[in-house]
Length: 295
Image 1 (spheres, rainbow, N blue to C red):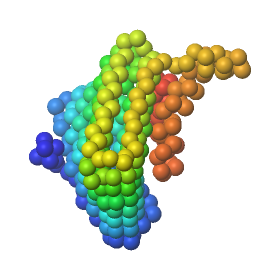
Image 2 (image 1 turned 30 degrees about the horizontal axis):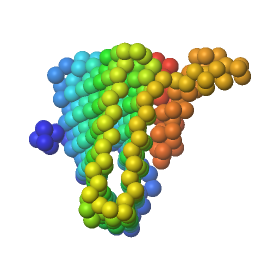
Image 3 (image 1 turned 45 degrees about the vertical axis):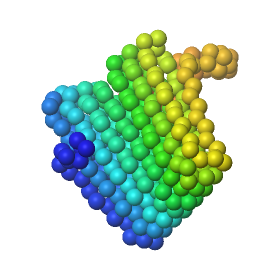
C-alpha cells in the first residue's frame, strides 16, 4: 500500500492475444543511492490469451548514502499464455530495497519468476502468485547472497485456487560473515484445488559461524487428492567433497569456489534469456570471490 501511494514512476505493458514478443522487455531502475532518497516504482503487465512475454527487472544504485527503493510489479497471465520474469537486485551496500511481485495465472497458462538478491544493506522481496484456472503452472525461484552485516529476506506466497495445477519452487541461500538471511514460504491449497502438485525446496549454506539463516516453509492444504511437499536443508560445505577434489589436484580454494558456484547456479540455469543467464552466473562467481561488480 505504501508503494502504491508513493509511486513516482511505472509502466503498463499490454500484450495482445496470440502475440509473441520475441525480445525481452528490460526494466532498468537506477537510483542515485543518496541518503534519504526514496525511489518508488509501480508496474503492471496484462497478457492476452496465448501470448508470450519475458520481462527482466533490474535494480541498481550508484552511491553509498543509504536510500530506499520501493517496487511492485503485478502481472496477469491470460489463458494459455507464457510469462517469464527475472528480478535482479544489485543495490549499493547501504541501500534498502522492499519489493513485491504479484502474478495471477489463468487456465492452461505457464509462468516463472526468479529473484536474485545479490547486494544491498537490507533487502526484502516477496513473490505472491495465484493459480486461478485449471492446468496452470508456475515456477518461483530465488538466490540470496548476503555478506558483511546485510539482511536479505525472501518471501513467497502461492495459492492453488484451481484443480490440476502444478507449482515448483527452488530457493538457494549462502550466508557469509555476520549476515542474516530469511526465507518464509507458504503454499495454500484451496478446497476446490483437486489434483494439485506443489513442491517447495529451500537449501542454505553457512560459510561463517556468525552468519544466520532462518527458514520457514509452510503448507496449508484444504483439499483431498493432492501432492504437496516442502523441504529445507542448512549446512556447510561437505569436507568429503573437498577432499575428493583435492585428491585430484584441485586446491582447497578452487574446490570451495566450484562447490559454491554449482550450489547457486542450479537456480541461475533456470533463467530463460542466455545473455542474462551468463551475466548472473558471472556476478554470482564474482560475489563468491568477494569481488562483486555493478557493471
